[in-house]
Length: 345
Image (cartoon, rainbow, N blue to C red; front, side):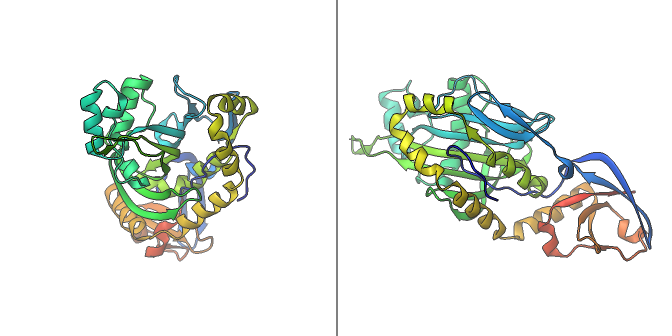
């Protein structure tokens, strides 16, 4: 999918597998009798334009965009989320900084300047995308509490990498992972960030120069629903445009960075394609295991429509009750497919 965007933005692809549902019931007649289907919420999403004078983007109708009260042009950040289910959405931050390269450097800095943020933020070691997100939960909570004074940054407790899907075009990794939300729910997402070493500043035998991370994106949904929401989150992310007003402010605030932004804007079609290709070539074993566990926990069977290929969750016992030939149990490879709805009793 090719999209024209005026400024840099990493288009991160996401996919999903379980599903919230809306109250649209369909009854299909078949050789085995009627089958009542509740269509998936993701099957009827409509979009509306969000425009705050700095960014414009398409978001699912009824969703919200959260821009923190304290935000700069060079580190512009926002979240897009479903207000009824805030665990579904994505976060974008153009740049974050303030962390050091090792725990030894952080501890030394703290001993010298205990009130400085550089001594309080967790170090990013190694200086990779995974290292960045391993430290993210601590840093996000600290930033929310001390700098933003509001719960903006997503706190990714127990962050665990499922799979490294490869490099993005800016050198950072694209990670598929899980984490535990502040409310205790297991979420799955795609994570990307490009960690940049800004140079060295040696003191006491330690490098005390800070790091920066650019184009930080977390896309997230409940673990069992991630595949279904992928295309919706990706579409919204891919529509983001930064306005001329934003670019003027950005240029005044961070003139040295503007050339990098312009250069990045030329390769976003490539980045989008790379992310999609990486996701499509992911290891499916996690999908199969997690979806089977989810079905067992929630009391579902999973079947597919032999005429359309659509995959449905069905009430436990459906295959015993159903005498037709149209709906059959899925094979393992079908657990990576999005769910079109739920068959009700």
